[in-house]
Length: 290
Image 1 (cartoon, rainbow, N blue to C red):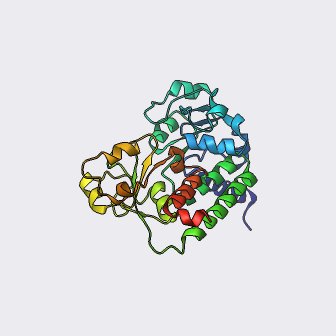
Image 2: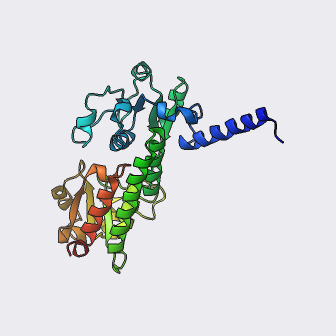
Image 3: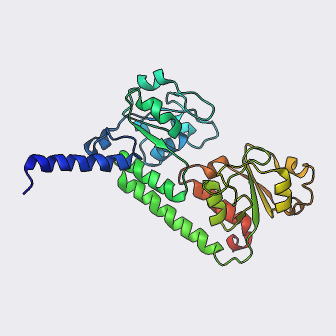
């Protein structure tokens, strides 16, 4: 029989590995009993903050990165201290340490500098839909809201199934060019945008590119002759696309099938399914207008 103290040691080791899994391998210092006590959370990425809001845990958020005023969660978070870390923003380590956080959500590239200051971190990454559901589940565990997180994930799965059922019988799928912010900047395999386009029943013209966020040449786009063009809302306007040299004969331009995509459609929260549904409606309006 295993001696009691060795059994306790083995039990402790197992717990450490379990919690390391919960935090993406970056927060082994947090024990199982401490999860619900993570009362002060800093979100250097916007989507963990949005997920915490969805779980009814706004009060746990001690500080955030900069939120744009057009963000649907801005009203709830506008009075939170801003400590940097968002796109184009540097970290304010002094402010982060000053709020005395129990946990910091950050990008992968920020993790080491924060851990070097003795902080517990959850480093985020590029997610697909399955990954987003795992992230929601993880944050539910961190906040002690496992049941609420499961409800969100279950609703996501049901919504995905409904959308995919409507497009699965379609035989001719449109070629789609997604433009992020400027000419040629797009997304391929390994990106959430590519998955949304594909699950919605489209064929991404960048699907064979070797990196998730490639830049396509104008000649390549013209040659591919996409049926549909989707522009991220803060990028090029549809009227400007029509004026580009050599684009007037592209199918999407000739038919007027140039659409703008809200930026949150490709964000790493449950709201990405608004994007999935909107893309499916764009590709197959007849299937969603019945």
